[in-house]
Amino acid sequence: MNFLFVHQNFPGQYLHIVRSLLADNAVREGTHQIVFMSEPNPNQMAGVRKVTYARPPVPESTHPDMRDYEMAMRRAQAAYEGAQKIKALGFRPDIMIGHHGWGEMLNLADAFPGVPMLGYFEFFYRIQGTDVNYDPEFPMPAAQFGTVRSKNATNLLALALGQAGQTPTRWQHSTYPVWAQEQIRVIEEGVDLSVCRPDPAMRRKTLTVGNMTVRPGQKLVTYVARNLEPYRGFHSFMRALPRILSRADVVVSVVGGDGISYGAPPAAGGTWRSAMLRELGGRLDPARVHFLGKVPYAQHLALLQRSDAHVYLSYPFVASWSLREALACGCAVIGGDTETVREFLQHGENGRIVPTLDAGALAEDILCVLDDKKMSASLRRRARAYAEQRLDLRDYLAKFRATIEDVAGQPLQTQPLRQVA
Image (cartoon, rainbow, N blue to C red; front, side):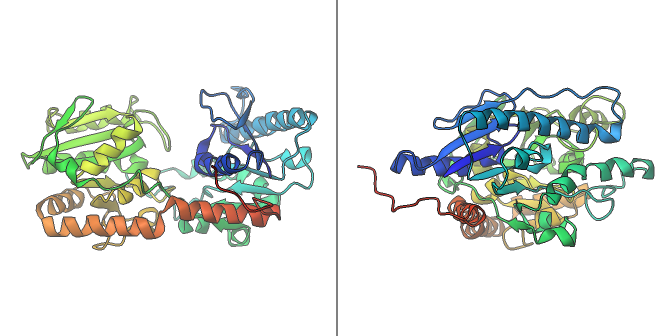
């Protein structure tokens, strides 16, 4: 089968499915041809033909509410022009798969008429009931509501294509209008359980990551986010730390960058890390709270495997991969009380649920997990069991492959695969 994947940051969400398709080629050469269109980046995958386009500029004169839409339209144009070049080389996809959030997919049906499309629908922005005005500390004035609604312009154009869609969680699916939900399938994403797995021996070792050393007998509290910001409850976590550090044996690791993935920067400028450190003054022990930045994946997993209590907080928004990885590693997860988290955690079963914005309640729950060895062991065991039942990468790939066959109207292999000698 011929595939055209599209994502502005190759390979994006498609790493695992592309690897799965490449595995077919390893069994029988030439089973699939895979072309991936993206903005330039250093990532490469053997067996994938990467086609790049330059990131289009957005004029400064563009209305603020239209900047995302303007960028999407420019990406759509760039992707269309790239598709024409691919077409001129004789390549015609059997299916096009890509992320609708960036706009690149919008004009590809014009480049390849009649080719089915499977688009990733990540989130439908709303004024009420999701992330907007969830946190009373950071209210959004009504004058900015139009900016939020405008973020759905690309979403709506993608839906108007009338093609198949997918999204990774039931709650993300529910954010879309009822009339659109029938068009979008839920394919729950998974993790490699052979890589993301518990390692009880970690607690008997000394772990060093960056400037942090955790010794046997110490309690490690872990927090992970792409960037440290309120959308992932960073402010609540930081405010809980003085109480958590009242236990002299606690060490805290904080993984994440200082950029902005979602929301806005602090009103006073700078980063949210610097803002929270200013707020807390000298109430944190820098010898026990370690900001590790963005760490290599192997170190990220080592921290989860060593964790005594893992904190995952989120506004009602898109769920992070780190939550899935923490469950697979058998972490005792303390999660925030939002739909995003409750889809994965059942309180007292495979994790703990606390009010996302209540730093005091968060601190007490973390201390409870650190103190109660029996409860902690039960949470860890059930977290891993949940991951084995619901988060197995093999199940995700099987569902994704079945969806591809359904949308494309043909099997991924036209004849039985033979084993590699």
